[in-house]
Structure formats: C-alpha cells, structure tokens
Amino acid sequence: MRFLFLLPFFLAVTNVLAQEVDFYLTPSISNQVLEKNGSYIKEFLGKETGVTINLIIPSSYDELVDGFGKPNPCFAIMSSLSYVHANKKHEAVVKLRTVRYGRSVYQGMIVVSANSNVKDIKDLNGKSIAFTDELSTSGYLYPKSMMQKAGVKAGNEVFARKHDEVIKLVYEGKADAGAAFYSPPSSKGEIHDARARVKAKYPDVEKKVIVLATTDPIPNDPIVFSKKFDPETARKLYTALVKLSTDAQGKQVLLELYGTEGFTKASDSDYNSLRSLLTSLK
Image 1 (spheres, rainbow, N blue to C red):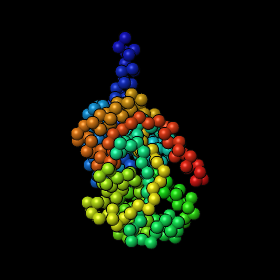
Image 2 (image 1 turned 60 degrees about the horizontal axis):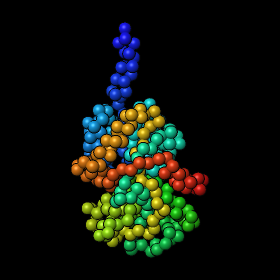
Image 3 (image 1 turned 90 degrees about the vertical axis):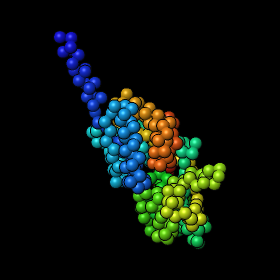
Image 4 (image 1 turned 45 degrees about the horizontal axis):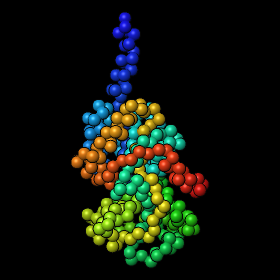
C-alpha cells in the first residue's frame, strides 16, 4: 500500500527526468558552424546531465524568440535583444552570460570600405546599409540608434542575417556600410570583431573594411531558459555549460561557435540599459 501511495511521486520524477528539452542557437553565423559545434555541446550536456536535448537552429531571431512560447521546455544561447523580447513576451529567465576576450560586454560597429568617401556617420545619409537581423543587438539596434541620433536616413537597408555576410557585402562593394559585432583587438593587434570571421577567405579584410564607429557597451549573449523549465534541470544544464568551458575540446567548440571563452552569472537587471535604449527609440 505504501508503494502505491508513493507511485504518483515516482512517476512524476521519472517524467521530469525523461523530459526532452529544446536547445536553440542564435543563427548569427553559418549553419554548418552552428550544426557542428552545437551538436558537440548537445552531446556533452546530455552526458553530463542525463537530459535528452534537441538541437534547433532557427531560421531567424524571431523564430528563436517564438520558441520560448512553445509547450516544450527550451534553453538558448541568444542575443541580448532577443532575450529582452523573450523575457517580455514569454517570461524567459537568464542564468548566465558569455565571456569573450576576458570581458562580459561587447559592442556593435559600423564598417565601411577603406576606399569609401564616408568619413563620418553623417556621411551615411542616403547610403546602402547592411544589417544582420532586426532582433540583433550589435548588428542592428545599437548601430541603428547611433545613426538615428546623427540624423542619418539610409537610402537602402539590407538584412544579411549573419555578421560575416555583412562584412562580405561591404568587402565586395555590394553595400556602402554594414553593422556587426565588435570587440577590441588583442594586445598583439589581432582583430576580434566580425571581420575575423571572413579573414580566411579575405586575408586583407581588415585593410579593405575599416571601422567607422563603435557603439556603447552591450551585455554579452545570455544563456536563457523558458519560464516553466524545471529549476533543478536548468541548474544541471548551466553548471554543465560552465564545465564545458573548462574542457579542452569544449573550449575550442565555444570559441569557434561565438568566440566564447567562458560564462559568468547573469541577472535580468544586466539588460536594463538595453531596455532603456529600446524605450528611447520609441
């Protein structure tokens, strides 16, 4: 009789442990890179936690945000702006944020061709501008805000989806300017911004595509969980992510994926400056 009394409890626990969760990656780079490195992260986290994980690479930032409104529990490495929207629409919860080059913040940048006659943000008036996605923080929101404050109105706006694609459009002369992520170069002068993503294909990219302006600091990409995600399962997963950043191969995977060196604790208030910017643009 005692066993029968406890049976519902054991069934509930078993259901939680057997529950599948969805793992989203921000579609800011090529799907090939996302698939390769995302699969390694999925397998590592699965082994560490015993959780069944479905890797999902959405076609857009909007699709990523919408995932947090679906019944299945999910977590994601997402852009700061996407998190703010997912938090507002679906009460998503942030647990960690990434560290790159020893910093937990980064910036956006506006780049132009070195041969361009654009020397100031105001010179962009009437020009063709390549952005990543309207839900990209560094590849749209912050650079767009800079342009608006300068009274700049683009002649044509193109959304290339990926940061490396933005750089390619400017390099190939298909856009007058572009917006993408920026981190300062190393002490040895190695570039750490979006241009580094295409340097293998275009070795002279840093000479031909130059930084016109950089934005205010932006909190790094957050690790986010859906509202009804089991707290203990979430803890296991983000603890395993931190462990991944100390694993030799895991380090390489994270660097190749989003230039991530590690993770630090995060809270919702970290993103209040971003919310203030959004309010100022309304």
